[in-house]
Length: 274
Picture 1 (spheres, rainbow, N blue to C red):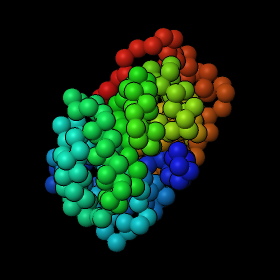
Picture 2: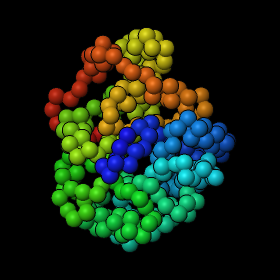
Picture 3: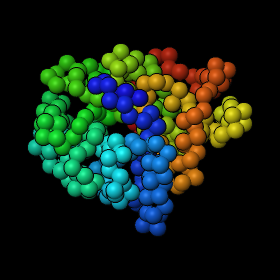
Picture 4: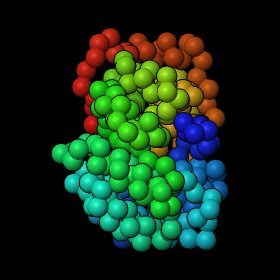
């Protein structure tokens, strides 16, 4: 998967939402993240919001000695999005992550801070070598158009949004807008955090390919060459299932069955968030 500047990143990464919340699972979660690196799932996504920094600290332990293998993504709260607060928030994330640079730094969602100030902060961090790329999260098409029109806005590398079989709204106009600019969409909760409806359609396709229904759902997200998926896997078994889905190629019959069970959008609607 290529970013707008041509740099290649894995299409299947690792999410960390709700990790580092139970001490009894810490070592299991660290082992899963390390296995992901072994299986070439080297993009790891987190946020200062996740466990109020504890997820970033967990990642620091998991990638110790392997930092150069990792494409590290984290996100800033909207209330930290003005220039000075963004720089301070980035420094805190760097300390928790135990690194000297963040590969991709995102605005978690849009708040009250003017976008121009956020872009100034991102660009200052980039110039200082604290971050390599920046982007946004939970931005709809109108937000992206506004961002692209301001000075420095064209340097946005990605937009991370909720995208899965149950939430296909971004296909109506957001995904085409991003694709026209060769900007990948980063899909969070690609399997609906385990809440995806267990339809007979998914079960049928799963039996056909020898995978789980959730594996089918993840393969469906990965079917596009302009989408990066960041499912969470807090156990090694779950992580191996995710990796297997990356190799699954759904055929036209599979996709038609899925479209009947989970119809694509026919009109514009509000961007879903979770």
